[in-house]
Amino acid sequence: MSNDTQTTAMVHCNIAGADSFIRRTPSGIIRSIRANVRLEKSQGHLYAMKKYDPETRESTPVLAITAQGYYHLNRYIGVSFATPETLYGPAGSPVGNPYLHRTETGEIQFAKARRIGIGRNAIGNLMAIDLTATFDLATYFAQDLWKKWQPWKQGDKPAAWGVLRDSDQAAKPGSEAERLNKIGWKTVRMPGGVSLQVDLSHTDVIKALGEHISRQKFAERLCITVCERNILKRFAVATTLDPNQPTIVPVISWINTDRTWSEYAEMARDVADGKIPNEIKEVVSETADASPDEVTAANAGDVDPENQETAQEPADKEPPTVTNTASDLPALIKGLRAKLETMNPRFVNAVLSTSKIQGLDQLDTLDRDTILNIISEASQY
Image: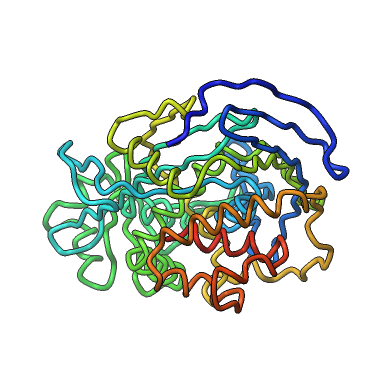
């Protein structure tokens, strides 16, 4: 693996009309291109949600960038992901990655996923983020029911389909809670030693149960998506999102001419094993619980019949505004070809099928956007 520990020059210049930095290393040149990328709600890049203030009991509309939005930005940022074989389970011992923790009845209580992202920070140094995310489905379901049941405006009463009880009292034989449970109600434990008893025939409860079942089905994927989104947030430039304005995100794209995809994969494996390569200047290792709002915002970009909110607004036909980056196309093709040459031929055919070309020799005939699309596809393998 080549060494990147010494920097001989960092020069600010203009390349093909683009405000750029060139960082020269002993083993090559890494060029930085700045771009303004437009995110579209119609493409699942953004999610409109309401932020609830418990003091005023009012909600205000806010925008969040979904995982699909960050994947779109990553076409320019260029973070590579790797999946370690293990993570630490509930008992502190290694378990398979991702990990699903089930109850005695087989229901998934929580999911854990670990991903490593390697890319370059704003000044071009290699950085690795080792993140383990936990998605607690039971807590998500409890909070979902609570949000549907609680009053949203001052002076309103809670919904009649739910009754809040002390958990110890609700468990007593002969209690009112026991009587209701026999005629179609269910007691759901909440944090804080209380339980919410709900009428299973009510449409709000049925909807919450349906969403909970869907999360059970896709728990593993949801957790991985949250993990990757949170990693990409660290590499993207912080941006204030205004629901009333177009969403333009500035990105800094460092183009590698002295690293291959296989070298990145090797670095990620070293980080997973606790061996930090000299090339990596910063390593961040974190374990975090994914909040319900975080899970919702991350996965809202997956537009499907059950989640149409991200697809309701008409698409703005204006393409993303990107600084002239034609000069980096040869480096992109070179890096992509090196990546594809290390992959299983079956996966290579699957990746190339999206661009309707038959072999690696035809990469030079493609434009930059198509190459970026193939890079994005290849990063998933």
